[in-house]
Length: 177
Ligand code: 5GP
Image (tube, rainbow, N blue to C red):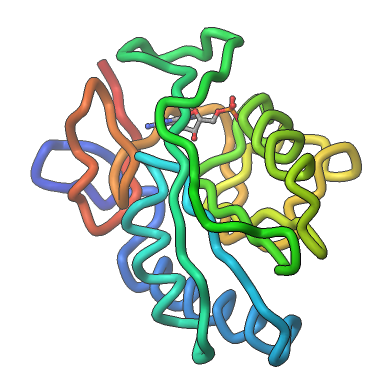
């Protein structure tokens, strides 16, 4: 049976599924990086809840910073342009860096962040995303850690919005206009 939330939206990924996946991802990240310096850069705004849960699932010291980029505005399709609204500050030259994104959709944000941070010469650079669309070519855009693969539906919740709303849902739901 279809599970609906209180806004009559279809629940695509439940709170329990998310928590299980984020916990496993955190354990994997901790094991992969060992004791090496690691900086986690969350991409605002969509990643803020995922980021908060993920960093607490990584049982080791971390540097945490944020970058805010804009590509979508309020409409539901990509504008094709990514620009920095707020840059991160932490020096990353001698640190491994893990970028945290909410969803890799077209991959334009992935490309932009990768190039922007690569120029600061981190020891290594990888991406963790809660969601990846099935259309993303993972050979071209290797998302090292990802929680769930989704289709073409526009989703909200767990940090993701529709016109600024629904970020505070504790699950991921399908948004229909
Ligand atoms: P990309 O650059 O990969 O096309 O898009 C990345 C950004 O677009 C994400 O960080 C997210 O903010 C936004 N985005 C893409 N698909 C969705 C979606 O289904 N729902 C929401 N709320 N945002 C999306």
